[in-house]
Length: 163
Image 1 (cartoon, rainbow, N blue to C red):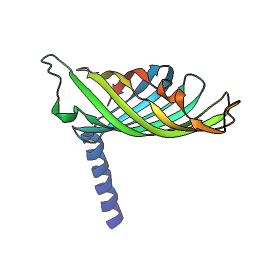
Image 2 (image 1 turned 30 degrees about the vertical axis):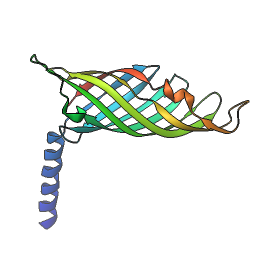
Image 3 (image 1 turned 30 degrees about the horizontal axis):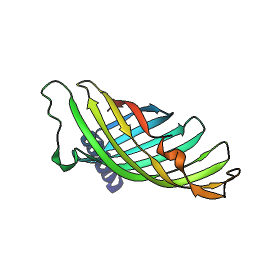
Image 4 (image 1 turned 135 degrees about the vertical axis):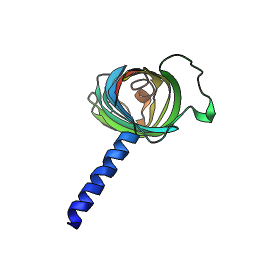
């Protein structure tokens, strides 16, 4: 009986948590394509996770912790829907197909989003991923700076379903 009570309690807790924390899933399209997931932690911050193919020449994963409307600067809007701007920091890793090399580093994000009154979100953001690159780099030394990360996952249009 104790196990049943614990299971019911955990199910109710998970249902309450998932209802109280809006999420969004969709795509980021720019110089490459990504599957994007956002999870709101509160009305002031969120976590974003992106998996994609930067410049259509590799695989990449990045996660950022973003602050919504940092500094209390809210975009005034009296119509349906809502505007937010955000900035954050995080990390990412991946690899390029040609030449075959990997990269790891820090990610940043700054952007603006519009949440419609129906479950759709559009965003425009810049998320560079800078750090070290290692492996078979052709004529270059085996370790260097990942300059592709400044533009390959950079500026992108996001389209997400809110749930």
